[in-house]
Length: 496
Ligand code: FAD
Image (tube, rainbow, N blue to C red; front, side, top):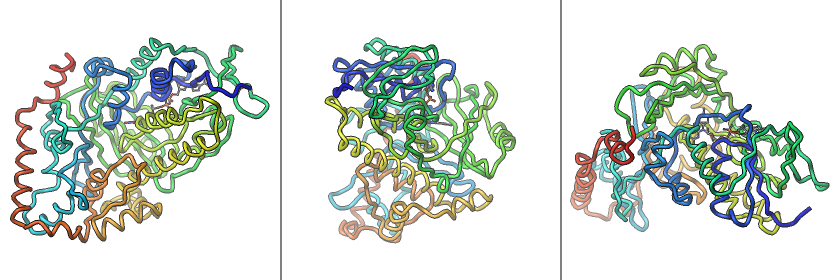
């Protein structure tokens, strides 16, 4: 058995597989060979259309042209997620990618806002958020300024199958070898590490490091290495999704919509050529027939196919790197797409692997660190998702009564308690979501802080009022001149 890692073999050609292939080939391509095995017979999960802003780092590392990327993937811009009926029936809020105002050294903007709001001199929190102001008007423009306060951070919605094909073409140009075939077995080294994939037709694909992107079945990480699965369904009981596309019927909003339903929630993701729709639900609380009726009864635009059911199990592989196998994508775990995090978790796993790449052989310390970081990252996303279900005043169905009453993970319970009592937030360095995200969802779901930081009292109230008025006016100012999202897409990439 060789000590050095020269041959990377990826199993699976979904978003995870092709993203891994493209990034590994781009970053360390000359030092290692990259081979990807996929089976068209099995196919890909074929959903996963909404992203968060770090996807832009992937595109930047790969050197992708943004206009071409949007054309190829029939992509649109995403400034936020609009949450309807989550806090209570009839109420909406946005979780945007923006930040409302500026923090000072020891005191975040939301403390100043909370003080002014109590004094009756502040507008709504979101009135200081450019992403919100542009999103609700259906507008978008690229704003290239250095100061994050005035930026309009964005992500994309895209067709996941087209994205995979786009990355495949990129990867093959970058030297990745693609093998079409069904993996039927593996050959092991004496020490138990994987030596080669054995395909159904008898061919063998040997490698030094295997990236398991085989989807929910976890072909290597579970079926071969049997690392076990941590089940989180007691916190997040939804276990099925039903997806169906519809035709475009209206102007394209620059945001994802998430609407809470009786036993789960419905997504609506606008692409250039269609709208992706789906219902995430708990089979314990809603039958498939009732789910189909609920979903089909809440669609706009012509239905473009039969609803497709995708069962899932929320949780994560107990070790996402084991022996010479690293699980990336659905094989590493599943969290419902409420905050569009799975593609980011793929990206983050690959970047982490590249940081700890075992050029000279697999070191237990690197594997332990990789697994520690992966665990915390998954757990913090899990907690953020649970927050949406926990902090709600809905009690109109058994589902909502059950999710509201569920015991929280300790870290989340402590975080909510701290915010409720003081307005402060703990920030885990591995948490994808920064303070503005937590503040928006905590407040959007109806959790109010009983206090704010005393430093917020040090600014004279008249001065604070003037500053906030000026901030709101400056945030509003660019919006009327921004093009409608569709108009921007046409002008930017000749699309839509
Ligand atoms: P898959 O797409 O399932 O690919 C698995 C690959 O492995 C396939 O190519 C298959 O052929 C291959 N394979 C399997 N077994 C074998 C074998 N024996 N031999 C050879 N090849 C094999 N993520 C987001 O970021 N945003 C979203 O909005 C979002 N929405 C989602 C909605 C739903 C309902 C679901 C279920 C997921 C969603 N996700 C979302 C997650 C996202 O879809 C996945 O993270 C992403 O598609 C990655 O999937 P994958 O590549 O791991 O697996």
